[in-house]
Length: 277
Image (spheres, rainbow, N blue to C red):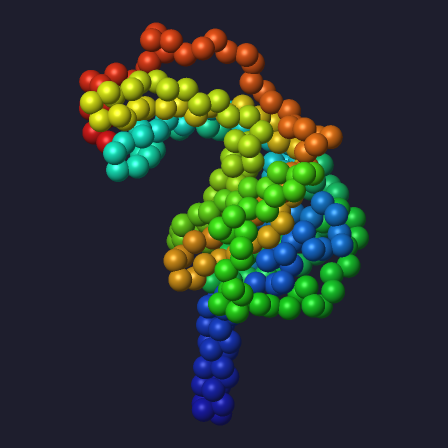
């Protein structure tokens, strides 16, 4: 009896270990745009001892992602030093904002379609109304089975859409990596719509300069096309797409600004040296 109980316990532990360490993702997670269901979103959350709690957090994140992808204002600026060794990032004031009332709308209308668990994340696919997901899309596929997609090197291009790729390093909780990759892809989309680059200061002795890149854009109806995880270099990639409005750029939040002048130079040589960067 003892041996039987011991074997059962060992088998359960092995099963739980296998589930916890499996890193396969359902096919729909790699190719979300291939789904026949429209307006699907994915929510992420860190694992929890209470499975229902983790799933609830993932659903809530999915509702928020719906609001972000439906309409997001991205504005602010980033400052860089173009040095002799390359471009060095200095600071950023870029921020996102979205209509929080859409979150409540999504909570009422979106339902879970599929859920998966990997070592340090739970993911849930949500869709409005009924969404029939075939078994082929539910099948797990492991990252090492997929060759590096071309879009991770060069984003697609066509006359009807903007495309942008976001990349994130590996964090302890995998959800953070995917969320950051999506956020960086949204910023990359915004840069395509409206970017203003100003030279704040030129450092003549080394042909260097400090520049500020300003962005002010409202993104509409953004969708996730694909995802990919690079196990070798430990990066997470997300490809986003947004339709152009009649083949033109979408809405810019920027107002006309005067040309940069000497008074606009917010970083002097002394101020820069004092940052310790």
